[in-house]
Picture (cartoon, rainbow, N blue to C red):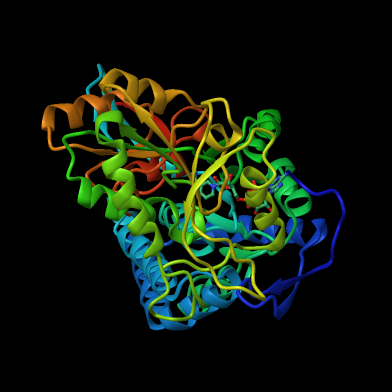
Length: 463
Ligand code: NAD
């Protein structure tokens, strides 16, 4: 939740070594107000540009990001402990999302609707200033999923990175200027949630909040946004299910399962942190899964071989531990992978079997490398167990039966499902949650709708 103590600066530590990387100055309310007002002025100029000029500016921004891919990736390795291969993908994702939405300014079509005695047309108008609030788990992609479509739709953006991970967002803000985007159009404001984030909610010139983070803070933002009927998009937590049926390719399902939950050290809202295995193949799956978990390479994230790095902070490691070592209900650890000793916020990949579906490790988002496994009886049981959660973000279904794959996909209440795969995110397809996992959709063609208002204009033609 939001912190109440006001800080002027934040020490960014390398999660793999606990060494200080940089002390970042934090914006206060006055600086936030100034950025919002400057953004409001910049937005009017930006929206008045020819669509082709806005498109070209976004393409240039994508090219500049591309030219700095390695620099951005290395910054994320040090500042957030992401593995090098993940961080390269993440920087590339910012480039790709910018390139994808650079096509939008020239394609923000309205409609012509048949009416009597005139012509009726609709326009997709920008909202004005859009605020993007980013969590620490995917600092670059989540920033880009907000700012790229927002800018493409003709808005200005004020962006607040998470306190723990401001470095790549600040650099992206500089690269936007290098690419020739107008000054103040994209302002990056490192700061506290309780200061900068809350001001985004209360400032009348901010017309929309695009928030990714915990469900608790999302609920608070939703309540605050009600005062000004402010638009919101919320991407919140998850407790997604990985469902393995007896007719699945068990080798493939077991080999892939660790990466569906331990990627980014489990700090992933789409993590499949509950594995549901049909009882008839439970033991066979678990034998293969154990081998796969022990094969996960947890090591210095700057190594090209690293598959998992450290957790983001000492506090996060304590939180993760509390679900296993300090749980109110005893948790049976079935097996573990390895992790380096010494400095750094390391925690090994851990597989547990809860004693009840009421256990915290089965119900709550751990946001760390801990996965809980339980057997199920049949298809109806699998769907019921998968849906027995307040969340609904993602999930996987492993089966060779096409009919079952479709039935279960339709039955699971979640926004992003994959069959015989764990992929959740493609920049060209919609992403978002059911139930308490969120509100609205990011990415793909749908995202632009949530950064524009539809305006209807009737023109009389009768004499
Ligand atoms: P968090 O909610 O504590 O913080 C997220 C952001 O909100 C940070 O920038 C923070 O400074 C800011 N914030 C905090 N209090 C605020 C307030 N009162 N007003 C405005 N802003 C405020 O979450 P976190 O710990 O940074 O991230 C972890 C959570 O994010 C997890 O629960 C995870 O599931 C969720 N998440 C969801 C998605 C998704 O797409 N659904 C993606 C990534 C992370």
